[in-house]
Length: 92
Image 1: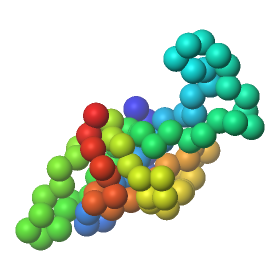
Image 2: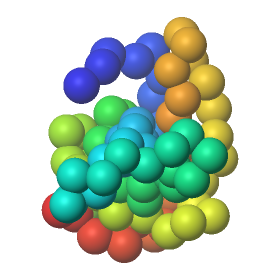
Image 3: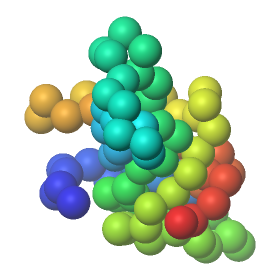
């Protein structure tokens, strides 16, 4: 888990996406042109929540999120997704 210098506001969460899988479960290698981004990631920073709704996720949680969730940002050469907690579908 990486340390970032950003603090999300309200109900926003900063997620570091997991890298695309390069091999199938049966051992076949997937070429770069056919790799898809995973919809899993690790929470690296959380906001304070809304007035009457505290956040459910915490730093270090592995989460599943929707395909078009969040905004992509790049900090210190790494890619992250900034999204609202409601865009997160599950904690793994």
